[in-house]
Structures are given as structure tokens and as C-alpha cells.
Figure 1: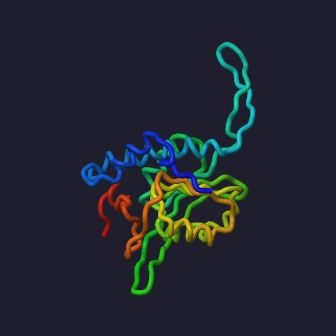
Figure 2 (figure 1 turned 180 degrees about the horizontal axis):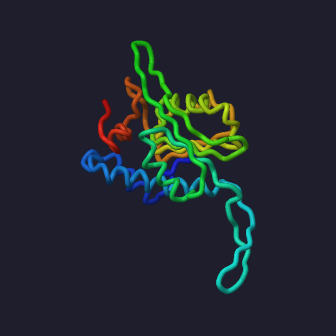
Figure 3 (figure 1 turned 180 degrees about the vertical axis):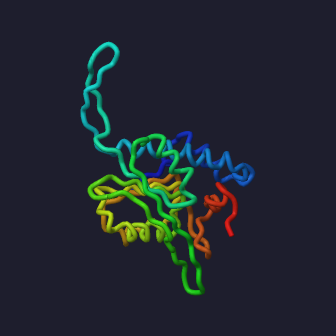
Length: 214
């Protein structure tokens, strides 16, 4: 399943335009804030698909039955670009177990490779897992993360939450992910360029959030 937020009119389109606009995105605090805001919105949308059950609570005036989450999802983000987006999810799922994966692009003369240098997650067995990464370009980061987490158990459902996706990455996931999953994004962009960055995209989300790396 593919959910594209821009298929519906919402304030997310305004936040998205500010993330992309080179005259606005240079303000790092605003860039991070807009990623966090979109994280809030996407967390709300994904929450509609989670499992709920009846729960009795007591107000100052009476007892009542309400609908509540049966279990908080596991939130996992890919460092460092995913941190502001992840913060938006964590504000909504504020009791969720969380995991972190360090991943970076390694380019050689033949092909792009994704290297992982840090993996820290709780058990994923039978749980709803939200994998949070702003840019879904090739899809390599997602599949490498899944390989690294395979000894943590198999999720009930994997929600891949990005901001911008490319069709090449979506096709790659379709061919290579064997567990139940869905992709949630704000926009599906036109293509990848020769360097495998999303076009028109928004640039390097990590650098725009935290400064250039060396």
C-alpha cells in the first residue's frame, strides 16, 4: 500500500513547500520544525491503521468507556537526517519503544552502497513498526536496515514513513521486502539523478537540519 499525503489538500503541502524552497530551507530551525510538523501529521495518519480496544477510565464526574491503542508502535529512525521527523512521531506516540540506526552512503566507481555503523532497537517480533527516514531514494537504506534488524524478530506490519519518495525506490522495495509493509509519504517525486538523489527533491535533509558533514 502507498499513502501519499499530497493526494489530499492539507497544511502539509505548505510545510512541504517550505522544505523545498531554497529561499526558506536555509533557516535550519524552520527546516527542522517543518520536518517535525510533517512527522506529527504522518503519525496521526498512520495511527488510523493501528489496533484499538475499549478501555474504561474515570473522569471527575463518571466512569466511561473509550477507545485506546492496544499497543504503542515501535519507532525506528535512520540517523542523522531522520531525527527531526522522528521527533514529530515521538510527540504523538509518546510511550513508544524506540530504535536508532546509523547509515551512510558509500560510493565507489561501480555502485552506491549503504553502510550501517550503529543498530540499537528493541524486539520487533509481532509488533507494528514505523521506520522513519525523510528521503526514500533508492530504497537501499530501508532494505539494509531490515537485514540488520532481522535477529530482532519479524514485525506484524512495517510502516515506512518518508517525506519524499522516488518511484525507483518504491519499485525496489516492492521487489525486495517480503514482510507486510506500506509506504507513507508526502510526495512521490519525478526521478533520481545520476548521483541517485531525488529530483526535484529538497536537497540533503541531514545537512539542511544540522550542517554539512565532512
